[in-house]
Image (cartoon, rainbow, N blue to C red; front, side):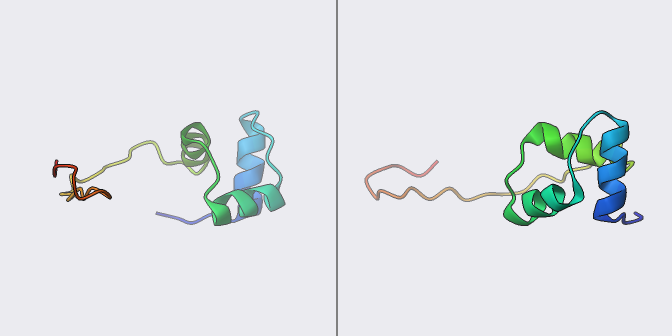
Length: 70
């Protein structure tokens, strides 16, 4: 997959009526403070239309030992 710069991503988002300056994008991405909708908008702007996710095995541990394991 080809990578794109933050400037290019910002321009592509603007073309899709999502106004997010380059500086704001960098902050959102670095902090991880964005919604799922924004993630999908970024993927679309980057030209990603198929997303494949592999199943993973998770072990859930309760913070309180009195809780049962799921």
